[in-house]
Image 1 (cartoon, one colour):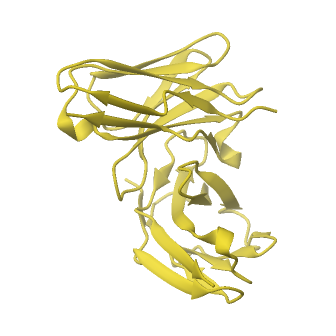
Image 2 (cartoon, helix red, strand yellow):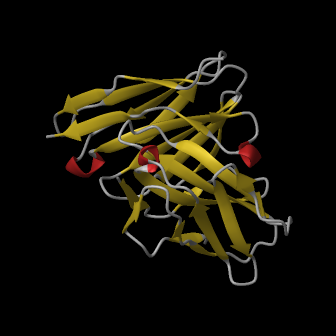
Length: 114
Length: 112
């Protein structure tokens, strides 16, 4: 079974600084997708970034980028120039190729301080 | 385009009762997935519907059931409610899950 582990329950960062959230996963699959979702107090899960396992290039979306290490089964999220609006729960998620079961980690609560 | 909408936003039920939660998928999305998110935890997959058929199920008992309608909206039904069913129930829609899901804001269910 696939499992997703986020080892940092809580993190904080000063506004405008950079923070990295960690995620590791366990799978025997070679083709899969990885995601980072943000859940603000409004409760709606918002897709931040997506990575396809067969692509070696790390995905980037504006201030958000990932460090995908397939051999190490690691998928960390880097947030640059942190903003107050980045305060939220962040969930790492895994989905096998051609599968419908998206597995989530327990989440990291990020607080951006002014 | 409209996003995913869920109703109601909050609900309080008594143990043993039955509840129905509703979800309208994003326009153009034919797949709906339901997740249970207990307080302080990540979402857990309940099941998915694709074109009105169940297309996968997580580790939830049969008293969790669902439906998908021709317009791709969906319902989650839970019978014989237990205290541990108290959670945020999230609905997510997609055209192809490879690009991630679009989530609603959830229904907060409290069982007393």
